[in-house]
Amino acid sequence: MLIKEPIRTCVGCRQKKPKTELVRIVKEQKKEVSIDDTSKKSGRGAYICLDEKCIKQALRSDSLSRALKCTFDEKTLAAELRKKAGHKNDQTSQGNG
Ligand SMILES: [Zn+2]
Image (cartoon, rainbow, N blue to C red; front, side, top):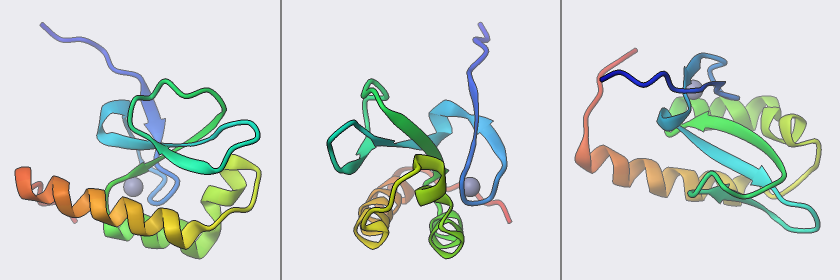
């Protein structure tokens, strides 16, 4: 049975992907920007692949700050994303690019 997933755009590579393949980053009101593992936090969100290329690209182009309409410590967030990415790579290996 196929379920159509919502499609979101990665702020790094700008590719459209199923929401489940991306990580949601959210800026909750009056809170710090954080990674939204539950996809249930309210606030302005941005999506990114758990991919070093996309993380770098997002940092370089400030696309996260722009998508979330605020400035924040992108390096700290990137470090968290990288941690997750490393973990993910233990389980699956998808070769593309
Ligand atoms: Zn991407």
